[in-house]
Every structure is written in structure tokens, then in C-alpha cells.
Amino acid sequence: MDHPLRKSLTEIMVSGALDHHPKLKFVIVEFHAGWVPHCFWLSDFWNEHRAPTPKLDLKPSEYFQRNMWVTFINDPLSVPFVDLIGADRLMWSSDYPHVESSWPKSKTYVDELFAGQPNEVTLKVTRDNAAKIFGLQPS
Image (cartoon, rainbow, N blue to C red; front, side, top):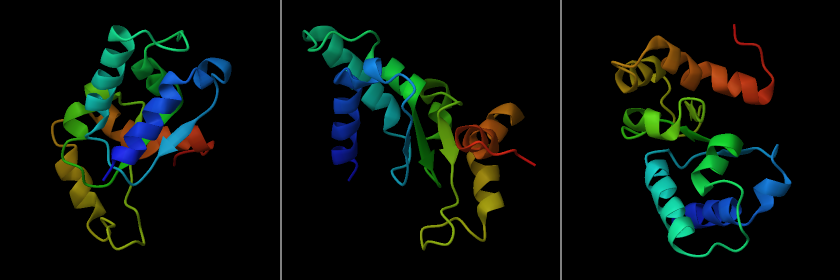
């Protein structure tokens, strides 16, 4: 299901394009985020063990950490991997008004997903990251 996305994302990370356009931003939506740590590992592994063309300034995972964000709705693997993905790179989404939306139980979803997480992480992922990317002022 997410294989074409991961392939495209990896190609962007290893193409050298992000060396030339370091301020370019990508927001990956509707693919959840539990796959991201594996994508980091695999792209960094291949980059290290094969001669990359072109030569990259950063590891592929570091380009993600600088240029990319990923959203999720109710992916039970996203929040447990927040330290690997980066709290600054995750954004929770309700996907309202679509059928896969968490609405009208969004608060329940968030409470369950973020149980045990510091409030700072919950606020970043559910509010602050999107506000920062899109230039909004959280209320």
C-alpha cells in the first residue's frame, strides 16, 4: 500500500535535490507513520553500503528530519516510534470529514494514542507542528 510512496520518498532523499533546495518542504499525508523508522534504516543502509550517486551531504534520514513531515490518524505504531521519527516531524490528523476520520471520537483517539507521552510531545504532534509549517497561530 505505501510502497510507491516510500519509493518516491527515498528517490527524493537520495537524488541530491534536497542539497540544492534545502528549504523545500514535504508533508506526507494519509499514509500513517509507523513505516518511517524502517524507511530511515533501509535508505541509510543502502546509502552507506552502496556508492551513492550523487554524493550526498547528509544521510537520507537526515533529509527527512530537515525537510519532511508525516501525518497519521489512528496508527498505533506512530506514537511509540516518536523518538525515532522525531516529535517535530509527526502530525496527528482527524481527516474530518472523510469516512476514515476519527471524528466524532477524536479526543478519545488522541488520549489513547498519546497515553504516557509527555504533554510537550502531544502538543507538538497534535497542534504545534502543523501551526509552524502552515504559519498559523495555535490558540
